Amino acid sequence: MIKILYLIDKMKPAGAQTHLAEVVSGLDKAKFEARLVTLEELCIKKIYDTSGIWGLFKLVGLIKKEKFDIVQTYLFSENVLGVIAAKLAGVPVIITGRRDTGMLCQGSWQHILAYRLTNPFVKKVICVSEAVRRVVLAKERVTFDKVEVIYNGVDIEKFKSPKVQKSQLKASLGIKDGELVVGMVANFSWIKGHEVLLKAAGDIVVECPNVKFILIGDGPLLQSLKLQALSLKLENKFIFLGKRTDISELLSIMDVSLNLSYSEGMSNTILESMAVGVSVVATAVDGNLETVFDGETGILVPVKDAKATARAIIRLLKDGQLRKKLGENARRMAQERFNSKIMIRKMENLYEKLCKK
Figure 1 (tube, rainbow, N blue to C red):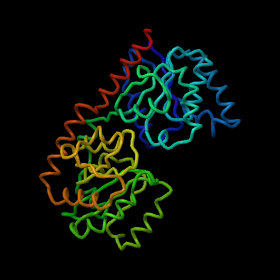
Figure 2 (cartoon, helix red, strand yellow):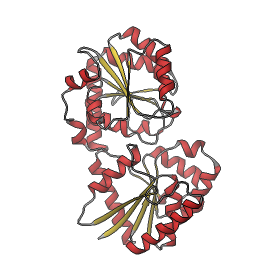
Figure 3 (cartoon, rainbow, N blue to C red):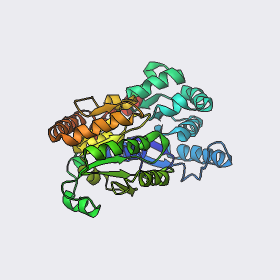
């Protein structure tokens, strides 16, 4: 039995947390014993203040007591503190994760230095895409053999057959029969590109007056985007749903799913959209290029290009056959390449390989 400790900042509805929940629930229980600990549980507010120091001691004690074979960390704070704790506790296999390109490309030198100092203690750095691996190799100066790419995966059956009556869900949101739905699942932060959709919406509404936009998520820019929709006199076209747990159901009523991020390691929402079989419009950046193949599984648009985004969305809204074709191709690719079962088997194989060395 291989004992694994997973360390993450907190459990919340977000990409890394969703991925971790899939891994923990899907591991072969006959071979692996998983324990999930959060920085929040350890009362760590910041890794470089007194709470971080006390949390480090607590974590070292926990690891020594439980005698874990592997410690795997996910995001920056736990990638640094968790690696140090695991090293002090004598853990034989330490694995860290890299889930985005933005922080490393544009982030502070302190972050990169912290990774360079802790990487020698790490057996593997797991990246969610080839795009992320390229950045890690360039910025962190690790050897190629230490970096592994394991794509995110989604529960295909869950997203393939959402348990909902589409007409009832649409009616509950104020969407009428015959109206087309363009949706975006993303927290309201600058990097997600919501303002590009607002700029594109005017052109879209002129060409496709029977469209409704649903935006799912929360964040610092939510109120300003609501005001922007109001100032553009588009408030009757936009539905802001806030945080939701019924993502598979909401994706199932979309005709077009959007990812307009300026940087993206590997978008769970794109994968979930593909699993549902909804056509995707996404920016041609980073990990998006590994999931959305232009004209085959979706349409790619340049970053911050509202006109190109509008044209792509209008094209799909006006062409039901194209939407169907792209959606079916995307669903097939999700089944073959981005199935959570495939992801978990790759993780298990890596664990067994590293523990044998």
